[in-house]
Amino acid sequence: MTKGLQLELRNSFRKTFSTACERKRRMEKPRKKFTGFIDDAVAAANKMDRDELLFSYKGILYPVTLCSPEVFRAMESLEARSDDIILAAYPKSGTNWLAQILNDLVAIFEKKTQNKESSGNDEELEEFPYLEIGDTGKYERMNKLPSRRIMITHLLPENLPRSVFKNKAKILLLIRNPKDLVTSFYHFTNGIATLPSYETWDDFFVAFMTKKMPWGCYFEYLSKWNKYAADENVMPMTYEELKENPVLGVKSIAAFFGISLTEEELQTVVERSSFQSMKKNSEKTHGAYANVFFRKGAISDWKNLFSEDQNEKMDKAFEEHIRGTKLGTMLKYDVYCKA
Ligand code: A3P
Image 1 (cartoon, rainbow, N blue to C red):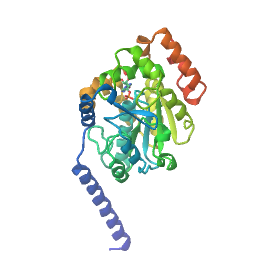
Image 2 (image 1 turned 135 degrees about the vertical axis):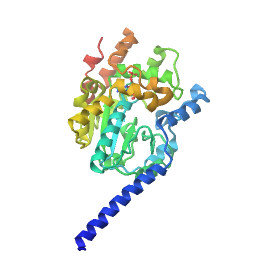
Image 3 (image 1 turned 120 degrees about the horizontal axis):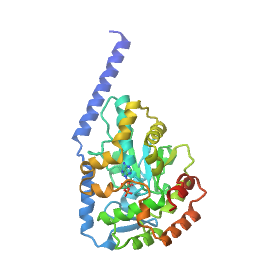
Image 4 (image 1 turned 30 degrees about the vertical axis):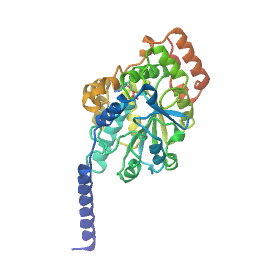
């Protein structure tokens, strides 16, 4: 046997062996369903009073049943990679929708490049996909996970681990028009025990406009992320543009993360991520809270809630904080937020 052939055989054995080990490791590791995490958090929240549900960290509120200062501190040890796939989105921007698209894209990528099954499986997780939710050991475990990792976050850019920007991880930044977002947040907040509920829409609106929301004020979120919106490693996208042209949206997301798609794969990703498909599958993916996560999935539902006065207040806040910025222009406020 020639030296070249010996080397080739050895490499091929190593590859097969390490893929088999990887599969075995994945199978042996205790896995948990997304619904398991949500159910545990809701069960804990049900034992608490309304005013105990949120805590403040560095001036921002978070749900105690999902986040903790210890985990925030441990998160700094995450070593981000340039091939990581990060989804940054304020709550109710369509995070779960984009998570579905990214999971499918990574599954396609892994099948093609590594000839193995995807790790980005929404039903059985190695780690809860939200970066800031977990235990203090999560980041050390994540550092050992193979590429490509998907991480979802509602955090402000300044609260992400420094390695995310230092190592140029790619970030898909999802934003949604503020009127539909606050409408969605109102229904969500009253539909799940982990967040404080509100007796009326008017009360919720005041809380939203006066910075009492978990994960902080949406206008501040937009203006802080706007500083990164033109970065090479950040791709901003609106809920509305994806809704109006999902084929183009999925195509640009795949291109941004360097994932090639056949026409058939593209159609499959688009079809599987439609609101109808996701809602149909939601009892499996989101359990008891399926209807809370997948409510209407539409544009302009805010028109059913907003009063004239609330319209004026939101228009003024948008004017003051966001209009004229890159993200502000992308949101097409005059198209989606005017009666
Ligand atoms: P609505 O409450 O307006 O229906 P998040 O995932 O960030 O919590 O956002 C939830 C919002 O996204 C909800 O909005 C939900 O219905 C909507 N959504 C979820 N999946 C969607 C999809 N496939 N297409 C469009 N909207 C979707």
